[in-house]
Image (cartoon, rainbow, N blue to C red; front, side):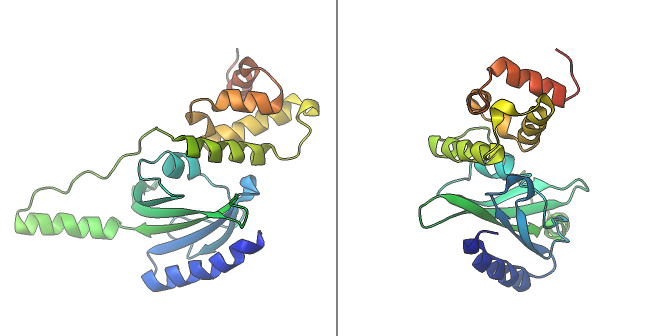
Length: 212
């Protein structure tokens, strides 16, 4: 774990302890993308665990219309069991202004939404507004962050001598994390790996079990 992140582990404990069992705080070390979760306070909310990866960073944070100044506050996502989670995420930078980690706060608001619905029925209020949706737009600053993320995923590997199987695994990982949802990332990955964009698409097809 990056030494800077240790203080955020204490902050995570304070946040989760303050807001109770429905609140979870997670610390990510983005220098190790494949196992970025390095600390979890009250992981029962989303079943987060140390050693997992940053599943939501690109889709729910960087591509969110609320993302600004290295943070996205009060965006909502849905768990597989249909619980609604309100979340806020903050990117953490070191003394050289490089992104090294992320602090995420997740709060289960399902109970409050049910209460709001019941109150609406009792008081004859209008139905609650729909929860905010994500927008698939990114700024140049976000693109810089994603470029850095791609570099960290590839790491110091000798890409020219990687087997096709390993290349497919790298591309599969990026795809699962939403990297390719951003326009221009296929070209960026192709450049870093020293192959053509057609090759990257062939890796993607293979990762998804398709044949070209």
